[in-house]
Image 1: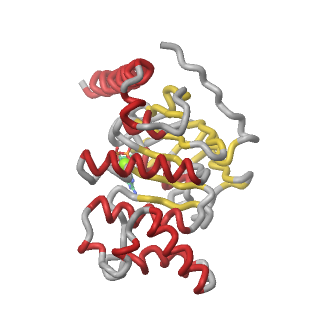
Image 2: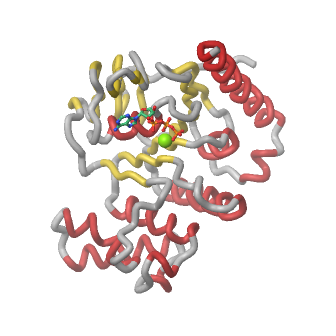
Length: 268
Ligand SMILES: Nc1ncnc2c1ncn2[C@@H]1O[C@H](COP(=O)(O)OP(=O)(O)OP(=O)(O)O)[C@@H](O)[C@H]1O
Ligand SMILES: [Mg+2]
């Protein structure tokens, strides 16, 4: 199948990754990587394990700048963590000694936000993810899915211009994962949000993404950027029954299998 690629140019992009390369000693993760992220889009990234997806997110948010090339956010090269970005991690990343309420409040207090504004935001976002009744519990008292909702609320409450999601739903069971996907879809329908979402699941990428970038194995680059031509709002089961969905799924599967075959050839 043929996919149109409407790559925005760097001027229209909120984030522009330009010829970025990241090495750790001998290991080259991504090399000469170019990708532009548009305002208000959900860009999903899929790629083989170890190709450098997490490293790329850490480079975008300034935790781990590229070895060469550059990442531009709002017209400025990223060189340190930027408070206009928020990250959600696979392993939740919550403070175990803080209650749900204080976990969500933490980044807001760091920004020295007024107490009443912190209170409003914490209450609002805990409500949005359905956890207002759990505000005074500790993370260990919650299920994995609930902990990830706290992570989501904490990131959203900062009103980030860019959300960076690193396989946020990978640690929860299949059913909870689908519920979280539905919730995320409905949140992004209510409020526009630019988001980069890394996942190993092709299904998740199609369900959530406005575009999907497929990465190659190391040294990695972008093999293809695909527009997901399924209008939003989306209903997951309806999306999955579309012939377009299975064609797109097969296409991405083939791209990833091809990367796997190449990787094995290089090893043998
Ligand atoms: N701080 C670091 N120091 C040395 N090597 C690192 C560091 N961070 C990542 N790497 C290496 O870079 C490569 C890419 O790692 P990364 O975690 O970005 O991959 P990934 O695509 O996110 O993998 P996965 O899909 O398994 O999460 C790996 O070989 C990893 O060992
Ligand atoms: Mg990773």
